[in-house]
Length: 190
Image 1 (cartoon, helix red, strand yellow):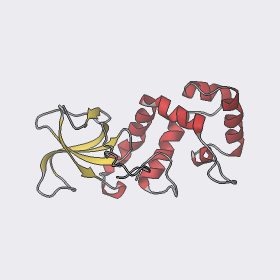
Image 2: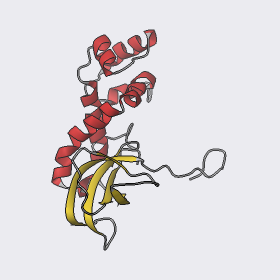
Image 3: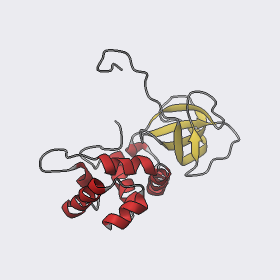
């Protein structure tokens, strides 16, 4: 991948992922011939759906945060590849909302920073309006309040703007992007 200066940028890989579903004696859908503990997970940083190969005889919990970086993995043998939303199990789809909401709460600063820095997309629509539950009225209140003082956390946003459950709204937006129902992505990198 080339940067604007023409230098080669290292590819960014996920360091952590959250377990959505697993099959103890499964077959990989991304790498032919790979069998074992197949884990479907969502990456913490890029929010991509991933297929992982777990270490045999390890226990995994749905929603568990796993280290999947290059060096020093303890529970994951390898990252097999990326998955499309259509190819994840029905169980993974049903776990996705609660796991993403946990991911959003765990990375609260990142999502509050988004609210603090969001800009208009074009003269008619602001990127804040892409989050479910935020229309023109909430958007104007958020912009006015953040001009006075940046939001510190979801609780601060909720108190000052009256927006209920901001983490749930962010999670809903991420699910829309992952499932392909959103026309434009603001959180999920393709």
